[in-house]
Image (cartoon, rainbow, N blue to C red):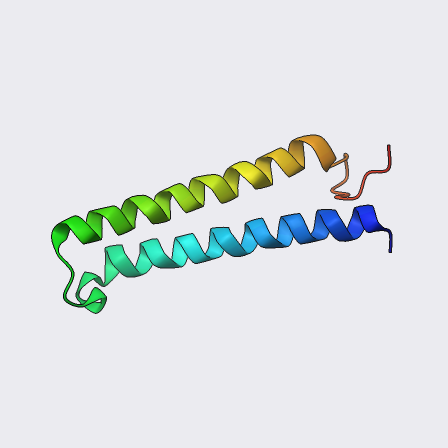
Length: 80
């Protein structure tokens, strides 16, 4: 493996992990708000916005990686 491949894999894996965590948080808060505990409505809305921002960030990073480092055929590891 090359450093380039390892670095791109790490960036993609971190963005995918962050995306999954944000989606999980949104699902819990939207589908099971009673599971959040003794939080006010304001706390819930702040937490929802935070999870949405995390999702947006992760999706943006994945889109950027695809745009600049994904060759035709699905190869994440383009060599320039």
